[in-house]
Image 1: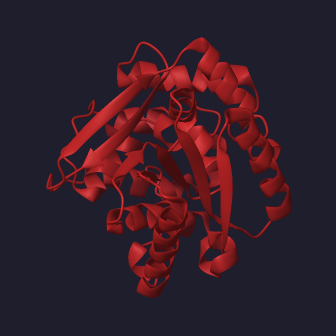
Image 2: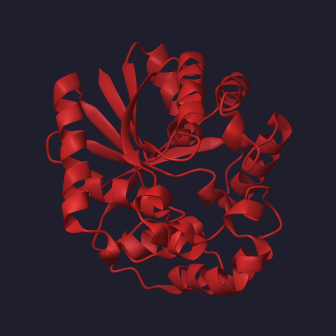
Length: 277
């Protein structure tokens, strides 16, 4: 089976689907990773890192070379706009363009299943990729939980509220979400202390948003083995320019991941994907 994982940026596929990739490769499937927003600052180095990461995990990488958000539109140089900007500000012509490029890629490569980001964490490029996934009609589509964003309790719940899902998830209170800000290494970058006064209220608002529950959600969960986690981190370590802000070493990767799993009610590291009808 030929499966395509749609990655908004270089590293998103391995961060979010590292176990899935290994399982499907072991089963004899061909995994293609297509990175959409790859053009801009540090793009040459990141492309080199992606090639090495793909080699380590057994997938084949492709780069579409659309501009990364801050290089595409100056408004996204603002952290608030980058993560919490309104999708209404994204031109319909651009959404259609991205969707068409992906449709063409799937057709050219004979893709039989596409896996898109859920866009938890609400980075604008992730939301654009998610919207493209919702428009795809040529192949079956699933959605992965974006890491490291989902590690922050409440992010996943807020995103499911935003898209109108009926997913059954553990309840997270405003107090729990705010109290967890110091629990995860990556949040020092994702929600910097000097910006929390403007960004935190918006994340909390999503947590309290009433879902329309029009989308029926079904999930599939993979429980990772220790060897799979080590192989996954070996691939992640190829992204030297990014991992310094996310998982600078294996111990941080395991500590942050398992802290989240405990809150989520899991016994060990799990990856989850969703389908919506």
